[in-house]
Image 1: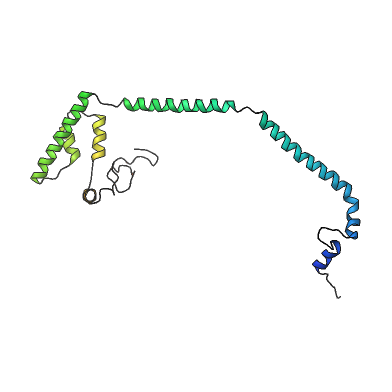
Image 2: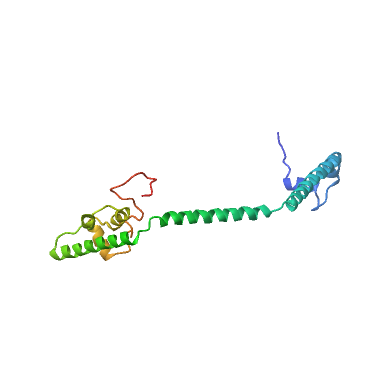
Length: 189
């Protein structure tokens, strides 16, 4: 059984001898499908033009005036939320007497620290501030936790490379939670 295969290029030349033209055999083979192909082409073309026309008309008749109203309402809601936030933050403002009391306690703590440093005794800021307090205040507690420094490495790094430590908590890992109050992974404290 000796089969002879026809080269695909030669077979293509029998159907289309020149580019863009059809051989008489190809015309005869396509003749029965001409009417069906034309009808299918007209239906597909009509569908595409219909979808395009419908889309353009639907967009053209739409009024986008309500978008401006929604944007204004959203901006107003954001402004009210910001005012409410500012109002809540201003509720923690100290009175003149409270501020004077806090400053006096801080001055006593600094003076005690300076005197202790001259004598060569180790100084603990938190204990000196707590010792000078006669009453507990949430603002002072916040000041105490922010100013607390622990360990030899923290003091050494803070003096030699001040930009390395987190300025609010004096830790190497910026934004790390306090190790005395770890809490949960999702807590912000």
